[in-house]
Length: 299
Length: 175
Image (cartoon, rainbow over all chains, first blue to last red; front, side):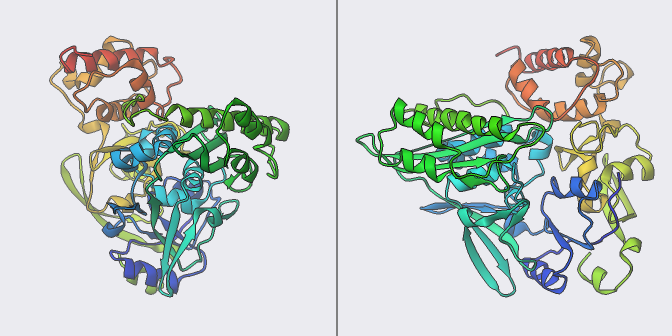
Protein backbone atom coordinates (compact mmCIF):
# COMPACT_ATOMS: atom_id res chain seq x y z
CA UNK A 1 0.00 0.00 0.00
CA UNK A 2 1.28 3.38 -1.00
CA UNK A 3 0.46 6.61 0.82
CA UNK A 4 -1.11 9.42 -1.17
CA UNK A 5 1.28 12.17 -2.14
CA UNK A 6 2.44 14.74 0.37
CA UNK A 7 5.08 17.39 0.61
CA UNK A 8 7.83 16.38 3.00
CA UNK A 9 10.17 18.45 5.10
CA UNK A 10 12.72 17.37 7.69
CA UNK A 11 13.71 20.55 9.48
CA UNK A 12 17.08 20.58 11.24
CA UNK A 13 16.13 22.94 14.05
CA UNK A 14 13.16 23.41 16.34
CA UNK A 15 12.89 26.99 15.09
CA UNK A 16 12.53 25.77 11.49
CA UNK A 17 10.01 23.14 12.54
CA UNK A 18 7.86 25.69 14.34
CA UNK A 19 8.02 28.10 11.41
CA UNK A 20 6.93 25.29 9.06
CA UNK A 21 3.98 24.48 11.30
CA UNK A 22 3.06 28.18 11.46
CA UNK A 23 3.22 28.48 7.67
CA UNK A 24 1.27 25.29 7.00
CA UNK A 25 -1.24 25.00 9.82
CA UNK A 26 -3.82 23.21 7.67
CA UNK A 27 -3.60 19.57 6.80
CA UNK A 28 -0.10 19.08 8.16
CA UNK A 29 0.99 16.06 10.18
CA UNK A 30 4.03 15.95 12.44
CA UNK A 31 5.97 12.71 12.25
CA UNK A 32 8.31 11.56 15.03
CA UNK A 33 8.99 7.81 14.80
CA UNK A 34 6.19 7.33 12.26
CA UNK A 35 5.05 4.02 13.74
CA UNK A 36 1.45 5.19 14.01
CA UNK A 37 1.41 7.79 11.25
CA UNK A 38 2.94 5.71 8.44
CA UNK A 39 0.41 2.86 8.87
CA UNK A 40 -2.37 5.47 8.72
CA UNK A 41 -0.84 7.02 5.59
CA UNK A 42 -0.63 3.60 3.95
CA UNK A 43 -4.25 2.82 4.72
CA UNK A 44 -5.09 6.37 3.58
CA UNK A 45 -6.90 6.96 6.81
CA UNK A 46 -4.68 10.05 6.82
CA UNK A 47 -3.74 11.97 3.67
CA UNK A 48 -2.06 15.15 4.85
CA UNK A 49 -0.77 17.70 2.33
CA UNK A 50 2.43 18.17 4.32
CA UNK A 51 4.42 15.85 6.57
CA UNK A 52 6.89 17.54 8.91
CA UNK A 53 9.43 14.93 9.98
CA UNK A 54 10.92 16.07 13.29
CA UNK A 55 13.26 13.11 13.62
CA UNK A 56 16.33 15.27 12.91
CA UNK A 57 15.73 17.60 15.86
CA UNK A 58 18.50 16.18 18.02
CA UNK A 59 17.62 18.41 20.96
CA UNK A 60 14.37 16.47 21.41
CA UNK A 61 16.05 13.08 21.64
CA UNK A 62 17.33 13.22 25.20
CA UNK A 63 16.15 12.21 28.64
CA UNK A 64 17.21 14.78 31.25
CA UNK A 65 17.09 14.04 34.94
CA UNK A 66 16.66 16.93 37.35
CA UNK A 67 16.50 16.55 41.15
CA UNK A 68 12.71 16.44 40.98
CA UNK A 69 11.76 15.13 37.54
CA UNK A 70 12.57 13.39 34.28
CA UNK A 71 12.25 15.39 31.09
CA UNK A 72 11.59 12.98 28.25
CA UNK A 73 12.24 14.51 24.83
CA UNK A 74 9.66 14.02 22.08
CA UNK A 75 11.98 11.75 20.09
CA UNK A 76 12.88 9.33 22.89
CA UNK A 77 11.94 5.91 21.57
CA UNK A 78 10.00 3.29 23.52
CA UNK A 79 13.14 1.19 23.62
CA UNK A 80 15.26 4.03 24.93
CA UNK A 81 12.72 4.77 27.66
CA UNK A 82 12.64 1.09 28.65
CA UNK A 83 16.42 1.14 28.89
CA UNK A 84 16.42 4.10 31.31
CA UNK A 85 16.91 2.37 34.65
CA UNK A 86 16.30 5.46 36.75
CA UNK A 87 12.85 5.92 35.24
CA UNK A 88 11.82 2.27 35.16
CA UNK A 89 12.94 1.68 38.75
CA UNK A 90 11.06 4.68 40.08
CA UNK A 91 8.03 4.27 37.84
CA UNK A 92 7.61 0.50 37.53
CA UNK A 93 4.53 0.95 35.38
CA UNK A 94 6.72 2.40 32.61
CA UNK A 95 8.50 -0.94 32.41
CA UNK A 96 5.23 -2.90 32.63
CA UNK A 97 3.70 -0.93 29.75
CA UNK A 98 6.81 -0.60 27.62
CA UNK A 99 7.60 -4.29 27.57
CA UNK A 100 4.13 -5.07 26.25
CA UNK A 101 3.92 -2.19 23.82
CA UNK A 102 3.83 -3.34 20.19
CA UNK A 103 7.01 -5.32 19.42
CA UNK A 104 10.80 -4.79 19.53
CA UNK A 105 11.00 -3.47 15.96
CA UNK A 106 8.34 -0.87 16.56
CA UNK A 107 9.87 -0.02 19.95
CA UNK A 108 13.17 0.73 18.21
CA UNK A 109 11.54 3.49 16.22
CA UNK A 110 8.28 4.66 17.80
CA UNK A 111 8.42 7.43 20.39
CA UNK A 112 6.87 8.14 23.78
CA UNK A 113 5.97 11.71 22.80
CA UNK A 114 4.53 10.68 19.45
CA UNK A 115 2.37 8.08 21.13
CA UNK A 116 0.90 10.70 23.48
CA UNK A 117 0.32 13.21 20.68
CA UNK A 118 -1.34 10.49 18.59
CA UNK A 119 -3.79 10.04 21.49
CA UNK A 120 -4.89 6.57 20.49
CA UNK A 121 -7.80 5.70 22.79
CA UNK A 122 -6.22 2.25 23.25
CA UNK A 123 -2.57 3.40 23.44
CA UNK A 124 -0.48 2.24 26.38
CA UNK A 125 1.52 5.38 27.18
CA UNK A 126 -1.53 7.64 27.66
CA UNK A 127 -2.67 5.55 30.63
CA UNK A 128 0.85 5.65 32.05
CA UNK A 129 0.99 9.43 31.61
CA UNK A 130 -2.36 9.80 33.39
CA UNK A 131 -1.39 7.52 36.28
CA UNK A 132 1.95 9.28 36.73
CA UNK A 133 0.51 12.82 36.46
CA UNK A 134 2.83 13.57 33.55
CA UNK A 135 2.91 17.10 32.17
CA UNK A 136 3.02 17.53 28.41
CA UNK A 137 5.02 20.47 27.06
CA UNK A 138 4.15 21.93 23.67
CA UNK A 139 5.64 24.85 21.81
CA UNK A 140 4.76 27.10 18.89
CA UNK A 141 5.94 30.44 17.58
CA UNK A 142 3.32 31.92 19.89
CA UNK A 143 4.97 30.47 22.97
CA UNK A 144 5.11 27.38 25.17
CA UNK A 145 2.36 25.64 27.12
CA UNK A 146 2.27 22.92 29.75
CA UNK A 147 -0.72 20.61 29.81
CA UNK A 148 -1.40 18.14 32.62
CA UNK A 149 -1.99 14.68 31.20
CA UNK A 150 -5.48 14.72 32.70
CA UNK A 151 -6.46 17.60 30.38
CA UNK A 152 -4.53 16.44 27.34
CA UNK A 153 -6.64 13.72 25.73
CA UNK A 154 -9.78 15.35 24.42
CA UNK A 155 -11.39 12.88 22.00
CA UNK A 156 -10.65 9.90 19.74
CA UNK A 157 -7.11 10.44 18.42
CA UNK A 158 -7.33 14.05 19.52
CA UNK A 159 -5.10 15.82 22.01
CA UNK A 160 -4.89 19.41 23.19
CA UNK A 161 -2.27 20.47 20.64
CA UNK A 162 -3.01 23.28 18.17
CA UNK A 163 -2.08 22.90 14.51
CA UNK A 164 0.98 25.13 14.90
CA UNK A 165 2.16 23.47 18.11
CA UNK A 166 4.75 20.74 18.57
CA UNK A 167 5.07 18.42 21.55
CA UNK A 168 8.67 19.03 22.71
CA UNK A 169 8.94 16.96 25.86
CA UNK A 170 7.05 15.27 28.64
CA UNK A 171 7.85 15.87 32.26
CA UNK A 172 7.50 13.01 34.69
CA UNK A 173 7.90 14.18 38.29
CA UNK A 174 9.79 11.75 40.51
CA UNK A 175 7.33 9.73 42.57
CA UNK A 176 6.67 10.76 46.17
CA UNK A 177 8.16 8.45 48.82
CA UNK A 178 5.94 5.42 49.38
CA UNK A 179 4.64 5.38 45.81
CA UNK A 180 4.15 2.06 44.05
CA UNK A 181 2.88 1.69 40.49
CA UNK A 182 1.79 -0.97 38.01
CA UNK A 183 0.26 -1.32 34.56
CA UNK A 184 -1.83 -4.34 33.58
CA UNK A 185 -3.20 -4.88 30.09
CA UNK A 186 -5.62 -7.36 28.60
CA UNK A 187 -4.71 -7.07 24.96
CA UNK A 188 -6.23 -8.21 21.74
CA UNK A 189 -4.05 -11.16 20.75
CA UNK A 190 -3.67 -10.13 17.10
CA UNK A 191 -3.31 -6.36 17.30
CA UNK A 192 -1.70 -6.17 20.74
CA UNK A 193 -3.84 -3.14 21.54
CA UNK A 194 -5.53 -2.91 24.91
CA UNK A 195 -9.06 -4.22 25.12
CA UNK A 196 -8.82 -2.86 28.64
CA UNK A 197 -5.76 -1.78 30.59
CA UNK A 198 -5.14 0.01 33.86
CA UNK A 199 -2.24 2.10 35.09
CA UNK A 200 -2.20 2.54 38.86
CA UNK A 201 -0.11 4.74 41.13
CA UNK A 202 -0.57 4.50 44.91
CA UNK A 203 1.21 6.71 47.45
CA UNK A 204 1.08 4.98 50.81
CA UNK A 205 2.34 6.52 54.07
CA UNK A 206 4.21 4.76 56.90
CA UNK A 207 0.96 3.84 58.65
CA UNK A 208 -0.28 2.07 55.52
CA UNK A 209 -2.83 4.67 54.55
CA UNK A 210 -3.16 5.57 50.89
CA UNK A 211 -2.55 9.32 50.55
CA UNK A 212 -2.94 9.57 46.80
CA UNK A 213 -4.29 7.19 44.18
CA UNK A 214 -4.34 7.37 40.41
CA UNK A 215 -6.25 4.76 38.43
CA UNK A 216 -6.17 5.31 34.67
CA UNK A 217 -7.60 3.24 31.84
CA UNK A 218 -6.98 2.86 28.16
CA UNK A 219 -8.88 0.93 25.52
CA UNK A 220 -12.23 1.43 27.23
CA UNK A 221 -13.62 4.79 26.12
CA UNK A 222 -13.20 7.51 23.49
CA UNK A 223 -10.11 8.72 25.33
CA UNK A 224 -7.73 7.27 27.88
CA UNK A 225 -9.07 8.50 31.21
CA UNK A 226 -8.96 8.26 35.01
CA UNK A 227 -11.50 6.61 37.29
CA UNK A 228 -12.58 9.12 39.92
CA UNK A 229 -14.63 6.43 41.68
CA UNK A 230 -11.73 4.00 42.06
CA UNK A 231 -9.34 6.74 43.15
CA UNK A 232 -11.75 8.06 45.80
CA UNK A 233 -12.33 4.56 47.11
CA UNK A 234 -8.62 3.98 47.58
CA UNK A 235 -7.57 7.40 48.93
CA UNK A 236 -7.66 7.55 52.73
CA UNK A 237 -8.02 3.78 53.05
CA UNK A 238 -5.51 1.13 54.08
CA UNK A 239 -6.22 -0.73 50.81
CA UNK A 240 -7.35 -3.98 52.39
CA UNK A 241 -9.07 -6.73 50.40
CA UNK A 242 -12.48 -5.20 50.94
CA UNK A 243 -11.34 -1.78 49.69
CA UNK A 244 -9.79 -3.32 46.60
CA UNK A 245 -13.06 -5.12 45.88
CA UNK A 246 -14.98 -1.86 46.21
CA UNK A 247 -12.53 -0.15 43.83
CA UNK A 248 -12.98 -3.04 41.38
CA UNK A 249 -16.76 -2.90 41.65
CA UNK A 250 -16.90 0.87 41.07
CA UNK A 251 -13.96 1.32 38.68
CA UNK A 252 -16.19 1.82 35.63
CA UNK A 253 -18.65 4.16 37.40
CA UNK A 254 -19.15 7.34 35.45
CA UNK A 255 -17.25 6.07 32.41
CA UNK A 256 -19.02 5.90 29.07
CA UNK A 257 -17.62 2.48 28.18
CA UNK A 258 -17.41 1.62 24.48
CA UNK A 259 -18.44 -1.71 23.03
CA UNK A 260 -17.08 -3.31 19.89
CA UNK A 261 -16.59 -6.67 18.23
CA UNK A 262 -13.84 -7.59 20.67
CA UNK A 263 -15.67 -6.67 23.83
CA UNK A 264 -19.30 -5.60 24.18
CA UNK A 265 -19.97 -2.92 26.80
CA UNK A 266 -20.89 -5.29 29.65
CA UNK A 267 -17.85 -7.46 29.14
CA UNK A 268 -15.54 -4.46 28.87
CA UNK A 269 -16.98 -3.06 32.11
CA UNK A 270 -16.12 -6.39 33.68
CA UNK A 271 -12.59 -6.23 32.26
CA UNK A 272 -12.15 -2.73 33.70
CA UNK A 273 -12.71 -4.24 37.13
CA UNK A 274 -10.35 -7.12 36.39
CA UNK A 275 -7.44 -4.91 35.29
CA UNK A 276 -8.10 -2.51 38.16
CA UNK A 277 -7.82 -5.30 40.74
CA UNK A 278 -4.76 -6.83 39.12
CA UNK A 279 -2.95 -3.51 38.79
CA UNK A 280 -3.66 -2.53 42.41
CA UNK A 281 -2.39 -5.91 43.66
CA UNK A 282 0.64 -5.80 41.42
CA UNK A 283 1.52 -2.34 42.72
CA UNK A 284 1.00 -3.42 46.35
CA UNK A 285 3.26 -6.44 45.78
CA UNK A 286 6.01 -3.96 45.03
CA UNK A 287 5.85 -2.38 48.49
CA UNK A 288 8.96 -3.25 50.48
CA UNK A 289 10.50 -4.79 47.40
CA UNK A 290 13.71 -3.32 46.18
CA UNK A 291 13.14 -2.10 42.65
CA UNK A 292 15.35 -4.83 41.27
CA UNK A 293 13.42 -7.66 42.81
CA UNK A 294 11.05 -8.35 39.99
CA UNK A 295 12.06 -10.15 36.89
CA UNK A 296 13.29 -8.29 33.86
CA UNK A 297 12.80 -10.05 30.58
CA UNK A 298 15.52 -9.36 28.08
CA UNK A 299 14.61 -6.58 25.69
CA UNK B 1 15.25 19.16 2.49
CA UNK B 2 14.43 22.37 4.25
CA UNK B 3 11.08 23.98 3.92
CA UNK B 4 12.25 25.54 0.68
CA UNK B 5 11.01 22.33 -0.85
CA UNK B 6 7.52 23.30 0.15
CA UNK B 7 7.83 27.02 -0.59
CA UNK B 8 8.81 26.35 -4.19
CA UNK B 9 5.24 25.30 -4.69
CA UNK B 10 5.99 22.20 -6.74
CA UNK B 11 2.98 19.95 -6.79
CA UNK B 12 3.26 17.51 -3.96
CA UNK B 13 2.95 14.57 -6.33
CA UNK B 14 6.16 15.62 -8.03
CA UNK B 15 8.23 16.11 -4.93
CA UNK B 16 11.40 14.14 -5.33
CA UNK B 17 14.07 14.30 -2.67
CA UNK B 18 17.75 13.56 -3.14
CA UNK B 19 19.05 11.12 -0.54
CA UNK B 20 22.49 9.70 0.18
CA UNK B 21 22.90 6.81 2.53
CA UNK B 22 24.91 3.66 3.10
CA UNK B 23 23.29 0.44 1.89
CA UNK B 24 24.99 -2.78 2.92
CA UNK B 25 28.28 -0.93 3.29
CA UNK B 26 28.12 0.83 -0.09
CA UNK B 27 27.26 4.50 -0.61
CA UNK B 28 24.01 5.15 -2.50
CA UNK B 29 22.82 8.50 -3.86
CA UNK B 30 19.46 8.74 -5.59
CA UNK B 31 16.14 10.55 -5.72
CA UNK B 32 13.01 9.18 -4.11
CA UNK B 33 9.39 10.21 -3.88
CA UNK B 34 8.52 11.47 -0.42
CA UNK B 35 5.79 8.85 -0.16
CA UNK B 36 7.94 5.87 -1.18
CA UNK B 37 8.29 3.36 1.62
CA UNK B 38 11.76 2.05 2.37
CA UNK B 39 10.70 -1.51 1.56
CA UNK B 40 9.46 -0.49 -1.89
CA UNK B 41 12.62 1.50 -2.52
CA UNK B 42 14.80 -1.48 -1.57
CA UNK B 43 12.87 -4.02 -3.61
CA UNK B 44 11.94 -1.99 -6.67
CA UNK B 45 14.61 0.70 -6.96
CA UNK B 46 17.60 -1.18 -5.54
CA UNK B 47 16.51 -4.64 -6.69
CA UNK B 48 17.12 -6.14 -3.26
CA UNK B 49 14.17 -8.50 -3.06
CA UNK B 50 15.31 -10.46 -0.01
CA UNK B 51 13.37 -8.01 2.13
CA UNK B 52 9.79 -9.26 1.92
CA UNK B 53 6.36 -7.67 2.15
CA UNK B 54 4.07 -9.88 4.19
CA UNK B 55 1.28 -7.82 5.66
CA UNK B 56 2.02 -4.21 4.69
CA UNK B 57 0.28 -3.16 7.90
CA UNK B 58 3.35 -3.02 10.15
CA UNK B 59 2.59 -6.30 11.87
CA UNK B 60 4.39 -9.24 10.31
CA UNK B 61 8.08 -8.26 10.35
CA UNK B 62 8.93 -9.92 6.99
CA UNK B 63 10.32 -6.54 5.90
CA UNK B 64 12.74 -6.16 8.82
CA UNK B 65 16.03 -4.44 8.00
CA UNK B 66 18.61 -2.74 10.19
CA UNK B 67 18.60 1.06 10.28
CA UNK B 68 21.70 2.40 12.02
CA UNK B 69 22.13 -1.06 13.51
CA UNK B 70 18.62 -1.46 14.93
CA UNK B 71 15.96 -3.78 13.52
CA UNK B 72 13.00 -1.86 12.09
CA UNK B 73 10.05 -2.59 9.81
CA UNK B 74 11.00 -1.15 6.43
CA UNK B 75 7.32 -0.89 5.46
CA UNK B 76 6.97 1.65 8.26
CA UNK B 77 9.88 3.90 7.31
CA UNK B 78 9.90 6.36 4.42
CA UNK B 79 12.83 5.96 2.02
CA UNK B 80 13.49 9.69 2.33
CA UNK B 81 14.07 9.21 6.07
CA UNK B 82 17.22 7.12 5.58
CA UNK B 83 19.13 10.11 4.16
CA UNK B 84 22.52 10.11 5.89
CA UNK B 85 21.88 6.83 7.65
CA UNK B 86 23.00 3.24 7.33
CA UNK B 87 20.72 0.45 6.08
CA UNK B 88 21.56 -3.25 6.20
CA UNK B 89 19.39 -5.84 4.47
CA UNK B 90 19.37 -9.64 4.50
CA UNK B 91 21.57 -9.62 1.37
CA UNK B 92 24.49 -8.43 3.51
CA UNK B 93 24.06 -11.14 6.13
CA UNK B 94 26.85 -13.64 5.50
CA UNK B 95 28.95 -16.05 7.47
CA UNK B 96 31.71 -18.61 7.11
CA UNK B 97 29.37 -21.57 6.77
CA UNK B 98 28.54 -23.56 3.62
CA UNK B 99 26.83 -21.29 1.05
CA UNK B 100 28.18 -18.36 3.09
CA UNK B 101 25.41 -18.88 5.61
CA UNK B 102 25.49 -16.82 8.78
CA UNK B 103 25.31 -18.77 12.08
CA UNK B 104 21.71 -17.58 12.57
CA UNK B 105 20.79 -18.96 9.14
CA UNK B 106 22.64 -22.21 9.84
CA UNK B 107 20.84 -22.58 13.16
CA UNK B 108 17.44 -22.09 11.49
CA UNK B 109 18.39 -24.58 8.78
CA UNK B 110 19.62 -27.25 11.16
CA UNK B 111 16.59 -26.97 13.48
CA UNK B 112 14.09 -26.85 10.62
CA UNK B 113 13.23 -23.30 11.68
CA UNK B 114 11.65 -22.50 8.33
CA UNK B 115 9.26 -24.14 5.92
CA UNK B 116 8.17 -21.79 3.14
CA UNK B 117 10.88 -19.33 4.15
CA UNK B 118 8.89 -16.18 3.43
CA UNK B 119 9.26 -14.79 6.96
CA UNK B 120 12.85 -15.96 7.34
CA UNK B 121 14.72 -12.82 6.16
CA UNK B 122 12.80 -10.76 8.70
CA UNK B 123 13.28 -13.39 11.40
CA UNK B 124 17.03 -13.33 10.76
CA UNK B 125 17.27 -9.53 10.92
CA UNK B 126 15.31 -9.44 14.18
CA UNK B 127 17.27 -12.38 15.59
CA UNK B 128 20.58 -10.65 14.87
CA UNK B 129 19.64 -7.81 17.18
CA UNK B 130 18.10 -10.15 19.74
CA UNK B 131 21.26 -12.26 19.88
CA UNK B 132 23.50 -9.22 20.23
CA UNK B 133 24.05 -9.91 23.92
CA UNK B 134 26.51 -11.86 26.05
CA UNK B 135 23.64 -13.55 27.86
CA UNK B 136 22.27 -16.96 26.93
CA UNK B 137 18.63 -16.34 26.05
CA UNK B 138 15.76 -18.28 27.58
CA UNK B 139 12.91 -19.55 25.37
CA UNK B 140 10.69 -16.87 26.95
CA UNK B 141 13.13 -14.13 26.02
CA UNK B 142 13.32 -15.38 22.43
CA UNK B 143 9.52 -15.58 22.21
CA UNK B 144 9.24 -12.05 23.60
CA UNK B 145 11.90 -10.85 21.17
CA UNK B 146 10.16 -12.34 18.13
CA UNK B 147 6.68 -11.03 18.93
CA UNK B 148 6.91 -8.64 15.95
CA UNK B 149 7.67 -11.39 13.42
CA UNK B 150 4.90 -13.64 12.22
CA UNK B 151 5.44 -17.13 10.79
CA UNK B 152 2.52 -19.04 9.34
CA UNK B 153 4.28 -22.39 8.86
CA UNK B 154 6.50 -23.48 11.70
CA UNK B 155 4.41 -22.82 14.76
CA UNK B 156 7.50 -20.94 15.97
CA UNK B 157 8.85 -23.74 18.16
CA UNK B 158 11.70 -24.68 15.86
CA UNK B 159 12.65 -21.04 15.37
CA UNK B 160 12.75 -20.53 19.13
CA UNK B 161 14.73 -23.76 19.61
CA UNK B 162 17.25 -22.69 16.97
CA UNK B 163 17.87 -19.29 18.51
CA UNK B 164 17.99 -20.57 22.08
CA UNK B 165 20.56 -23.18 21.14
CA UNK B 166 22.63 -20.72 19.12
CA UNK B 167 22.57 -18.18 21.92
CA UNK B 168 23.68 -20.82 24.44
CA UNK B 169 26.57 -21.90 22.24
CA UNK B 170 27.66 -18.32 21.52
CA UNK B 171 27.68 -17.41 25.20
CA UNK B 172 29.78 -20.47 26.05
CA UNK B 173 26.82 -22.52 27.19
CA UNK B 174 26.25 -20.56 30.38
CA UNK B 175 22.70 -19.89 31.30
